Image (cartoon, rainbow, N blue to C red; front, side):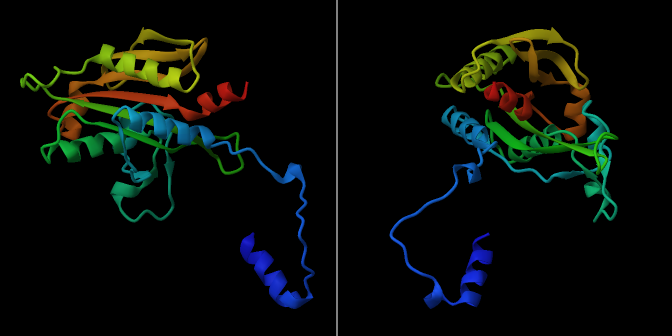
Length: 232
């Protein structure tokens, strides 16, 4: 927009535009930022020791099958088989980042990512549906030094998620035991009666596929659901 204003002013001539000491505008032109919640999420997570990660939004066909996240969207001219589909889950990129750090002797770290995922949908003009998700990963490896705590488990992570969501104003958080593909044990996360996402411990099959050596606790939360609750 600024570039257009500059071109109009240049064509008219800067000397032909009268000066003014006042300013007026329409309040209807101000639009509420729907992503303002995302900034609060980032701030709160960083304050409790999480590091933000940015994944490639393109995945191989194999990676799109690891989690039940809807049908993936294939791009027409992929650069390679490794980047053939738009991601349908935020989790594969985070797990690969955890493996990358683990192989470089990093231990007991926490990562998060906020990003878009895409699914095939017959209800839209483009036949795709875009959703925004928050992914969290806890890397846990036993450390017997007296200054360090033991392994993280699902209950530690459950407490962190509750504290994190409470800090954002979501104070009706509940967890329910469930079975989810790719996880040993898992919990669905609810705010009142609205499901926000899930938390789980990655199972042995996926740990082998990703070549993970230590336990990974995984959480997937719908940013879209958080935004809707905030609106009301």
